[in-house]
Amino acid sequence: MATILDPVSTPAGFPGPVRRSIPFPTAVQQSFTMGYRGLLKIRHNPEQLFDVVLQPIIFTLMFTYIFGGAISGNVHSYLPVIIPGILVQTVITTSIVTGTQLREDMEKGVFDRFRSLSIARIAPLAGALLADVVRYLIASVITFAIGVAMGWRPDVLGAALSVLLVMVCSFALSWIFALLGCLIKKASAVQGISMLVLFPLTFMSNAFVPVKTMPGWLQAFVKVNPVSHLVTAVRELCNAGHAGTEVGWSLLGAAVIVAVFAPLALRAYMRNA
Image 1: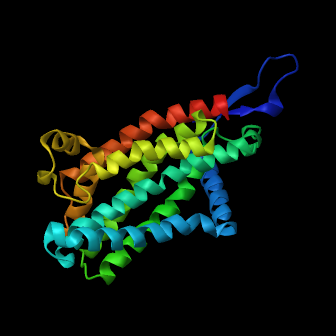
Image 2: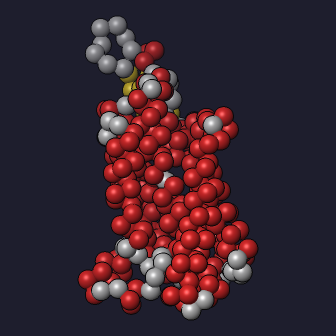
């Protein structure tokens, strides 16, 4: 059951709106409806897709040709290492936009109108995050397309499963940025703080270079970095064609993030939106 605030049914003289519950399936349906709203925004503002279209192309070509010879001896040998890393780095970075767009909508008063509707409180937040899943899919497809065009040959089923895994984990991570969007008052500050948090996680991982080449203290951090576990899981799926224990750890981490940060984001949204 999901709780909503029903402003219409507030009796005269009472200090606040009456709370009532709606069935969970209805809350899910309303979340997808809000997600469709997000897709309409992308349709009317296609420039929102520039980052997910251009970033995978630029990063894949740049990192592959700069680091390929130095790390793996040649570009072709580096592709099984770098493409999974670029996929994770690109899609996770894309999830930052969630918090930025939420704060922009809140500054415009859009969410004030949502709060006045008789809908599940979580629907506007979940809908915005669901719409961004389409952005994750576009970024994933472009990254794999560039890799294949350069000569990489992943396991087809493993590649499809890895895209699904990265999308699930990025959706979970976007709840953290949704929380930041609800707490921080300026969209530019949300983006800046999110990048400050995320860039060390992505670059201080095993996404681009072998861990053994790093200093000992950095190796210790990389080994517990959740981004490293996700990159390893994607490499196992794409290059070996099987799911190892890292897939389970990645999914468990995603579930924990949603369980912790979704309620926090919802509470901050109701208080500060």
